[in-house]
Length: 186
Image (cartoon, rainbow, N blue to C red; front, top):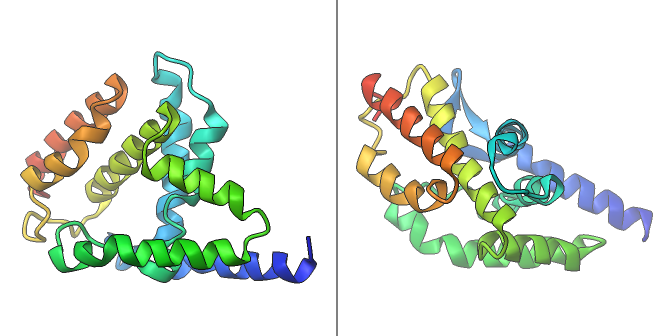
């Protein structure tokens, strides 16, 4: 390992802090880095309620890296068909670019492939947590409303396949959805 390669990797990955997501934190947009941190925190709390053994470190690896491609691809909002059309191509190019400078790109590519293709129970759990985080962020967003294009049916269609794989994430999702509807945030 060369120190310059390590510095390049660290400075490039740190740019995740600058990627804005569609959700708000107070008066500003949430960053993808904040989202990743929140997912890690949620996973750490929720994993203890999963009835089957899951490798916590693998879950953390998936959540730590799951959105780093957004450094170059940006965050695609799933209520925007134009952004979603370009998402896969942009993320594949971003993955290639990130892999070109990481010291252990094989490990990174394995983590990303397992996550994207849901090859492990841990990757399925990580994806469920990714969905739960967005619901919690909306619940905490004082400006969220049912006028932003994220409808209950759209969110259910997008998230249910993932959250339904674990009883605890299914229950969390249904409870959060009920609260979001009650508060007219969906």
